[in-house]
Image 1 (cartoon, helix red, strand yellow):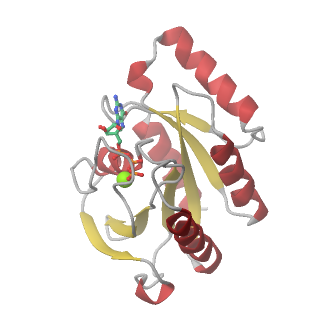
Image 2 (cartoon, rainbow, N blue to C red):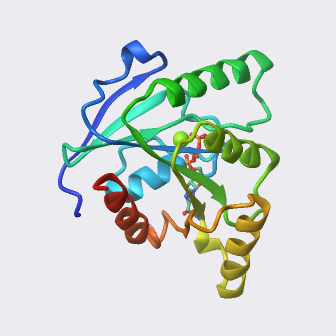
Length: 194
Ligand code: GTP
Ligand code: MG
């Protein structure tokens, strides 16, 4: 399960612009600035998704293709304060449509910041995924900013605040130090070959 080829396919808002659903698809969600685009780059081992220190960088649904057999989707983040009500509504509709119509969606990777408790919006996202019956895992990002004891505590807090069922794994990752990526990829490859 190594990285052979990586392609940016396209950006889209509406289903008519999504690429054909020929491969299993993994989508990445989480609040703005949590590290979604950085995780894609860490998985792909190159700087293919745009990363920015200021939140709200990713505005469209971005489709990538790994090894000509798995789509990875970088979704725009939520919870960025400086966004108008109309834009938030646009985001909600774009994501809801994607979740509902994308037939090849195999797994959602939900990112939360390992340094903080999951937010109210994170809790809502988790409940949204469950209500739509979409398989998901949780990734706690930026683990390089934690010491050993904080790492253990972070995963416990996330499980508790999100009220995660036991069968949903939490992966602690650092895109900066490339830790936890192999474990996450192992789970993903397993999941899509089920
Ligand atoms: P939006 O597209 O705005 O929703 O953000 P995003 O979730 O795609 O976040 P992005 O990957 O652009 O990263 C946001 C900031 O966090 C950047 O400054 C990254 O360098 C930083 N960052 C991301 N991952 C890590 C990590 O594992 N460790 C550290 N220390 N910083 C990280
Ligand atoms: Mg992004």
